[in-house]
View 1 (tube, rainbow, N blue to C red):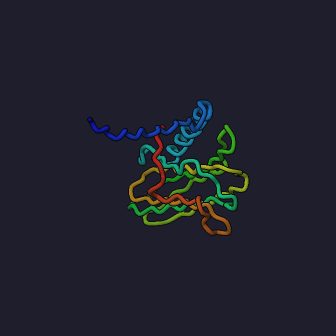
View 2: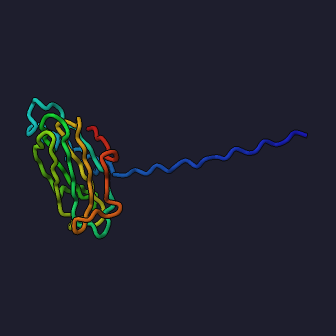
Length: 162
């Protein structure tokens, strides 16, 4: 009598859900491309192509009222940055903050934007003229205290390609 081999467990495949509709994706891509063109103009031709990093869409902690982005430039030359905050509360992504600055070498800048008008979801997108020796952190805060679930450290930002 042959012994039966144990049946192999079949793994359930995750259901792929489309995060955004085609129209929503098109609107976001157009918004990002416009932003890249603007940041390239402010960066000048010497800096070359912009680098884009994103938090991805974050679920807002109900007590979070401010998006705080800290950017440290450890490099030996200045960088141009543009911080874009997008509300994802509807099918039409809406810009709720847009801050540009130049950060000198070996210095730090902090950018704050109110999230009072965001009910549930938002995203932080950073445009950099150079990412070499640049550290970015995001904290959703209330009374200047970071809130659980709204913290994105440098290693957690995602590169975005257009």
